[in-house]
Image (cartoon, rainbow, N blue to C red; front, side, top):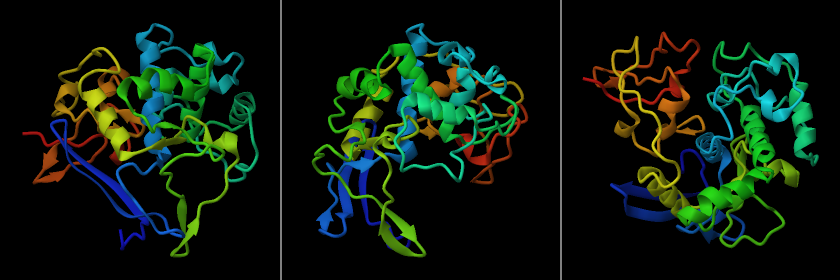
Length: 306
């Protein structure tokens, strides 16, 4: 924490579903010197993407969305370049969408329709399925699709289907207006000095690319729900992947491992060419899978093979 100038951390260590340690370190508010505790509410950042992905998989299970469906089926009129983008592409960051452009104005409130219109104006970085590139806009789009399919705000869907059933009592969409007990202040590093976070328009703090409040206690409940299948029924498992030296079923992987927004439990169903990497001399081997062009080093979970 000192080396990276991290103001505060809430840490939970869980083994076999049993919390061994849940403790706060540092401060949740530097100006008022408020210590971090287990109940401290943090902004999720992109950790929140896994809940968007889970919501999509719930709708797949409900028969309301298909992984191979083109997103235009749910969004209506889309640019020609978007017509071959599928739900699977957005979940796996292979749709060609990029990040917010440098000149994007986060201080302006936008409706979902206005945000979608702006996203449509941004050229794709590559043809859908051609390679991989991390995309916030792809997950923003998934949130809009959830809203259109369910006819409710994606945050309300998360509350109804994930947060309330699992007892994640502090989990919610970010709101600067509401009184949120135990809320941590946000900070950023500027030239090695800690500064207050930049102000963002309220609507831009509600998008599905990671605009949640969460506590360590919420994440313990989430992990427990994934481990015991309380969020989704059993998904297809793949025991071997052609062209890979070592592969595994999702039951062999920690349920809470998150791969760029998608909980690992769902990868066998989402990514038809999912694979693990082998271990070389005690160190993780990280060449990209030959069956997955453009797969980044960090995008594949690491597990030691024989």
